Length: 341
Image (cartoon, rainbow, N blue to C red; front, side, top):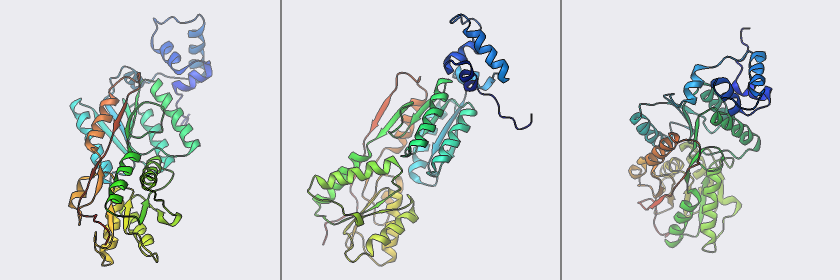
């Protein structure tokens, strides 16, 4: 029937009451014995549902697929562009093709793209954006990734928060804590934070690092000291406006990412304010343009290309044992900060 969805191997496994791995083995390996009657049950379910083996799935199971799926938040953000470059560099060494999609920090879009990539039988799926704090979405993503991994695919997350696949774990909290320590040691006690959406785990981790860094020095943030904006240049513009128009504006702006910091710098410049004489500004990420900003941006620099390379190298490994690569940032002080006047 036109438009009728294809029957998946997962559907056969559920109908027969067996694991996905068992169904796959029974249907793909005629020499595999298994428990008596189990093969007949799987074959009967496949026949009843009208399942047809997918040659691309077999290619995936034998690790012969040449496609890699890469899910990022936004290719226009230099953070993800630089990271993606590292993925592509390693993929090219192995004659692999990278298919990149952007979720734009939309949880439903992330899930949909993950399903599409799995259906296309890519060899590995690399999830390079922050995981989302949403129980329903997390459960759906977990089920999809487990099914995909059981079918032979490899999963890599450039974030913590997922329990399936390998992980490149960026120390967002520790990096921000180090940055705050440096600002307090400069003499700053008045801070404003331009944060991103709280549903993103990376944003929560960076905020935790800011709060802990201040707590280490006996300082705290008030509710009005944090504004939540889109993680973009426009978000930085809006965040700087909200914080600096207060009766007592902060003397140091902590942006949740470099791109957000760029927006803040632009707004301050348009208002005739001087950085760092009137206010200091910091970012997070270490994108290449940070050094070329006016003034050059103080930030926590991450080895973004190396992060991408690590992710792609993990994607080539078997699913078990699970590998976790920890990445720490380096504080780079530039011209955008100075002691408060």
